[in-house]
Image 1 (cartoon, rainbow, N blue to C red):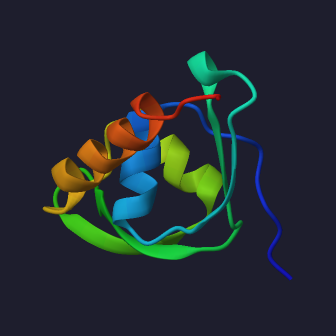
Image 2 (cartoon, one colour):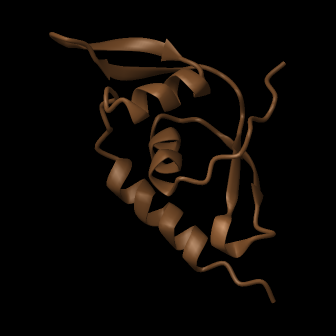
Length: 96
């Protein structure tokens, strides 16, 4: 069974995860300055840069984050639009 992950707070990484189809299961907004997004812990097929080509690999969330941080992940064409929606979701939240 897939379980939720440790929280992610980097909106650029969150947008990359969403662009590849990883699913959020919860958003913790107790601290509006540092909202946390939890994802379903599963694997997705992603585009990764190797030394000579772009290949498809099945990556877990941790592997995905490592590839993202190493700048070896190909960002999909939907990434800018998803980033805008993530930014809107974070900045438009009001704790009333």
